[in-house]
Image (cartoon, rainbow, N blue to C red):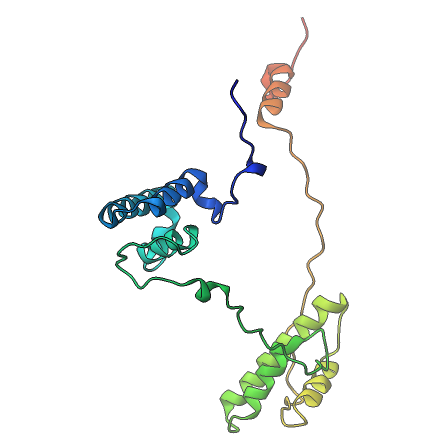
Length: 218
C-alpha cells in the first residue's frame, strides 16, 4: 500500500518560488561528502533555478542572486566554491532599521506635505521672474488640490491666503493674477454594450439585415 505524503508533513519550503524538487536537490547536495561532486551539482542546480525563474534575468547580477538563494535554501549548510562571496545567516536575520516617519503636522491636509516642501524650496530662492512664476504654478496646483478634496469651487483669494500662511508671508501673488479654472469632471455611468455576437444576431433578425432600408411585407 502506497502511503500518501502531505505537504503538512514535509519540510517547509524556504523559497517557494523554486519548488520542492529544487529544495530536495539542494538537501542532497549538502549530504554529499565529495566536495568536487558538490561543486558540480551546485552549478547544475543554479542553472536550473535560473530556468525556473527567467524573470530574475532582468535583475542586475541575477547569477549572484541565484547563488545567494542556493545558500539560503540550504540553510547556509552547503559548503561549495561559489563565484561570489558567500552570504551568512546573520546577514539575513538582522532586522533592518526602522524608517523614521515625519512627525510634524500638516497645516492644510488637502494640500499635503509635498506642497509645503515646494513652498519651502521656492521661499529660499532669490526674487526673480522665475520665482514669481513658480509661485503662481504652486497656487494653481493648490487650487486643483482644493477642488479635488472639497468637490466645490474656491475663490482665488482663499488660495492666496493659504499660500501666505504656509509661506509665512514670503510668497505672494500679484493682485491681477487669475488662477486657472479647476474643473471637476462629472462621474459618468458607463454604458454597457451588448456582446458582438448578440449584436450580430439582433441585426440578422431585423428586416433587410438591419440596413435601414424600407421593408415591405408580401
